[in-house]
Every structure is written in C-alpha cells, then in structure tokens.
View 1 (cartoon, rainbow, N blue to C red):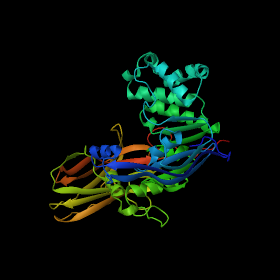
View 2 (view 1 turned 90 degrees about the vertical axis):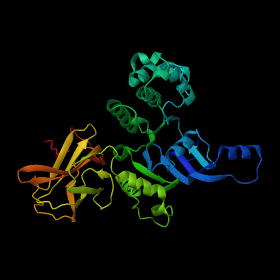
View 3 (view 1 turned 135 degrees about the vertical axis):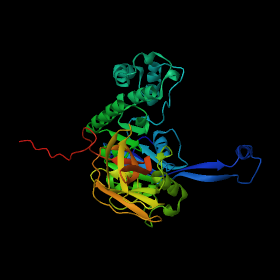
View 4 (view 1 turned 60 degrees about the horizontal axis):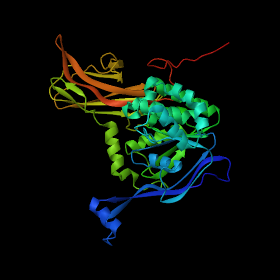
Length: 426
C-alpha cells in the first residue's frame, strides 16, 4: 500500500484490488493445512473483493452501497490499512481519520480521555496536537463525567459519540465512516451530519458506507455500488439508488459487462424476499370471511421494493381472497411512523372506489396509488378489510404493521409531510 500518488487530483486510488478469504468446512481442516499434514485442498476461496478499481477525487463526498456481503466494509478496511489486499494496490494522498467499527482501537480498561489520546496517537497525532483538540472533542462527544470512567462501562451510544468525536475533530484530510452513525441518537446524528456539511465546505474528502439511503442521496456527490465483491456501477446518487433497489428485489437487468448471473444469485433473491416479506411482529385479527393474502409496494417504474424516493408516484397492492359472500367490502391502508403514530390513511369507501358485493371464491387486488410526500425515514404499512353487515361494522381481516417502507429523501422539511412549498422572496 502506498500513501502518496503522483496524481494530485485524487485522495484515494484503488487499483485492481482483490481480497480472498479461505473458507474451511471444519476447524481441523485449517489446522491440517497450517501444519502441512495434508496436500489436499480443504478450503473454498471466497472473493470478498474481486479486481476492484476506484478513484476518489480530493474534496468529493462518495458513498458506497450494496447488499450484505458485497464488500463495502472490506474495501474501507483495506483503504485504511486495517486489512491487506490479496492483490492490487491502494494509493492514499492525505491524512485519514476512520470510524470503521464501534470501539475499534479502544482499550476497554482505559477511561474516555485516555482512549482519546490512544486513538489520536494511532491516527498519527502528537500529544501536543491532541491537547489542543481535547476540549473540542469532549464538547462534541457530550458524555459528561463518563469521560473519566472505563469505556467498558459505556453504552453503545456513548462509545460511538466518543469515537466519532475523535475521528471528526482531529482535522483529517480524509474522513472514512462505516455505518457508525446508526448507533447515535437523532440529535447526535444531526450534529454529525452538520459536521459533514462543514467538511464538504472545507474541501475535505469523505467516504462512507451507509444503509441510510436518504443520507447517501443528500450528501454524496457520487455513489459506488458493490455486489458480491464486484464494482457493479458508479454514478449519480439517484441512479445508483434506483439500481440498488432493483438488486434488492432481483429485478436488475444485467448488462454483459456487469457481474454475471445476478438475477440467479440466491443472496439477491433472499434479499428480495426480506425486503418485501411480512413483518414477524404483525398484529393480525378478524373473522376471516375474507383474508388479505398478499401485499406489495411498487415504485414509479413498477419495480417491487420497500424503498421509495420522495416526490415520486408509488403503489401499495393488497390482494384479498373472499371465503364467503361479502355485501360491500372496504379495502383500507394506513401508514405509521417508527414511533407508532398513524400518519395517514384512506380506504375504498372514502375514495368512492369500490362499493360492490363480492362472491365467495373471488380474489380482488386493491391498488392504492399516490405521490410520496412523507419525509425521509422508516414507516410501517397497515392493511385492513372491513365492511357493514346491516348496521354492524365487521372486521374481516386486519394486518397492522405488515410491511416496512423506506422513504429516500435529499430534502427533509419540518414535520411529517413536505407541503412542496414554493418560496419567493421579494
């Protein structure tokens, strides 16, 4: 690995990097090979990274996304020198500060301040430089008197606050972050992203891995999409997020130059099922004279997904099988936020969309079509089939919190909804 390159425009260059792990069926096989007791090959080679090339310009904010096992964390560890590549070359021009894993580089017996100096020294700073930054670090971490306690007593939130405070306040030229922000509370996350904005304005380089597609969309100049250790694509955030959503549900149309057999890959199909399957915690009840047998979310391109871009059209499909004659079924759909607060909802009676009797044995699919105006974040869909038999209100089948939906946004206003306000200043 080289930490200086002749091309002054690039902060990071990854050239033909491969990382191979040997996977053994049994621990004894590893021991036999280590001791030279067998000439037979007892392992399979797993390509965590497969001949990957990346170039990141100075001052860019670049995101890396991909399904689990795609090589995102591996490539960050190779760039920062935590792992050595099996083959290829990495060139880094600039001082790196990295936050790769919760508590990585911390001594559990040391207190918070001692770990600040330990981490700072590992990054390459002198005691005098850390002294000058200590107040800013402690103010940013904001963990109070816990800085004098051993870090083994810290909560995960305290861990990440202190680790990120060190990483972001020692004035690096390149900041690398791997999913660490998902641990802190919403106020700490806001403070970290505000620091991201400051770094961007100062022309620093930021490279981060995140499953938070809203953050990827909002902060990144460019996005790199990895899959099964291969660099699949790179480009504008919206384009890469669209392809990633297709990957999740196994609907990405593979080009010849792309990774072969993507559509047949079991891990992709498993991810597709996970993205769209029913929540295990679904509350379900009703007399079952009719049953909701399927539900799906589709984006504006007709792809089945659980990730929707704010501002675009999308559909929620609810398929119902009728076990008995129903005089006037009502199809209902509502959306809650992560706190369980019902944000919005409607039904076929309110919308005057379907007021007909249905016979036993029939199946109907209700399609709720609307424009996504919710703020970026996580939401839960609830579905219901009800009706009136005489004057009595009847619940045939209800599924509360049946499926999640992720709203991807690069602009969040105040509250639950974006009113799409047009502002004019005269």
